[in-house]
Amino acid sequence: MWVGRKNGEIYGTWTVRQPNDEHHTGMEELPDDHPDVVAFVNRPLPITVDKVAALETRIAALESKTGA
Image 1 (tube, rainbow, N blue to C red):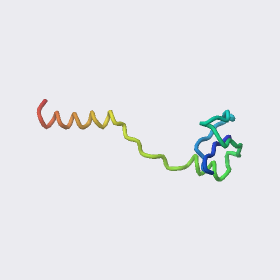
Image 2: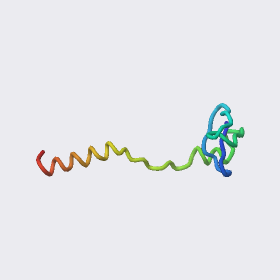
Image 3: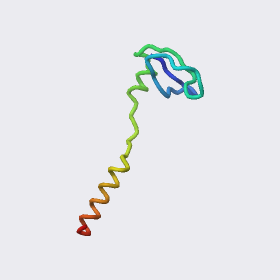
């Protein structure tokens, strides 16, 4: 597995080597079971909020309160 590192931290993984440019720096090949790769792949992902869905829910709640 190819990994990209910035300041020593993995920021991405790929099955093929990425070109060295401003977006893909510090490329190195590591085995899939390397502790750094395993930790990166199994890291908790941030909770993302679907802003459109959240607004639709709020609008529906307001409409139900106003009878619209």
